[in-house]
Image 1 (cartoon, helix red, strand yellow):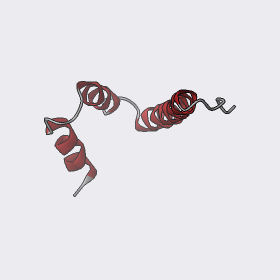
Image 2 (cartoon, one colour):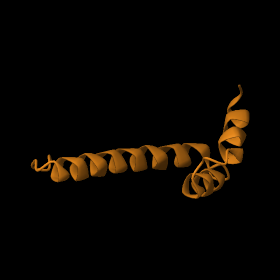
Image 3 (cartoon, helix red, strand yellow):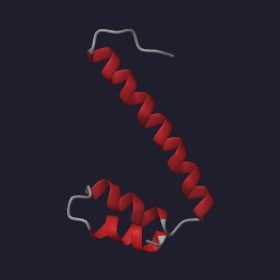
Length: 64
């Protein structure tokens, strides 16, 4: 499946969150390099936040 078809499949999937749909719709109208770089930073930040939240809820120290 071509990337544009994959994007359309995600956008048309009723199980896709509104947040993801909105983000993806905005991203595809931006410079592709800028959007990909921002998405990579967002991915890193959200993964690290998730790790910190899960570690804190398990009573572990938050890694730095």
